Length: 129
Image (cartoon, rainbow, N blue to C red; front, side):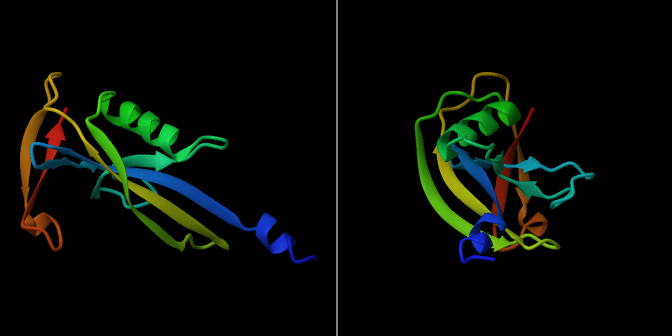
């Protein structure tokens, strides 16, 4: 085994996640109860980066697939996290973005979620479709 093998045999899973803001409210989606990762948890919009896809292209694709939104005021990187992906010898790298939009005109409704549903937060909002 040469020194380069440790890099080519190691798996890194890349993902993007958007915290979409509109009028001081954030869009959170509830994950399906049958998901392997974080079932039933509220999270931002996002998913895995496909092979040969840029982070930005993956972000736009995931937002459109999950919400139908295609117009944004601003998009900016916010944070990067890295953590092990058990049980295999791999890791997950998440790129987080802050996305601002104008008020959607396609029938979105807002529902308030109170702090007992979340840690370290007074209250959050998510849009219902």
